[in-house]
Amino acid sequence: MKKLVLFSPKEINRDLGLFLIRLIVGLLMAFYGYEKLIHFNEMAASEFWTKNVNFLGMSGSVPLALTVFAEFFCSLFLIAGFLTRINLFFLLFCMAYIFLVIFPFSILDKGDNGYQFNDAFLYFIIYLGLFFTGPGKYSLDQRLFGKNN
Image (cartoon, rainbow, N blue to C red; front, side, top):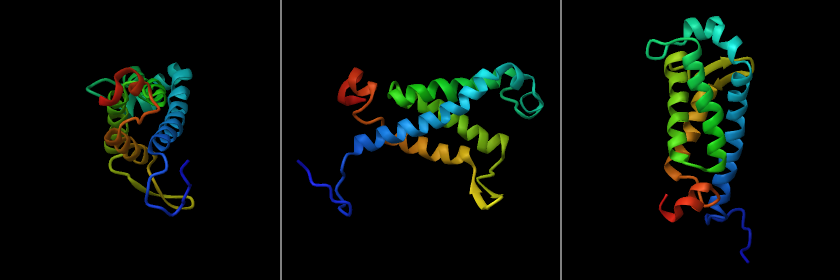
């Protein structure tokens, strides 16, 4: 049995850490997507989605549906670790579109309590890290595809 040494440079359990990151970040993003899903009709008709969001010449319900797909469904697949890098591609694209196009380069903003980072930028960085590390062994990818995922 391994001793837990808090100040040791040795890893304790990298796969458990990756699972916890996937779980927490996936749940947080799934809540964003779920709110958009249950209020889809009102949001698609709102001024923000009809006037401010324009994806490939489309506005309103089409970009909202793509956002719901990424934020809700891809997040659920991310939690399970199923086709992780494919789902992360959609999540990365969605977050990059938000902080580069919708709120152009507003990575750091002045908030009520000082400066704060844009949420989409923070999610982008976390998703990028997960993209490079992979899902870890506590994932469906590991069960379905083995060690070569």
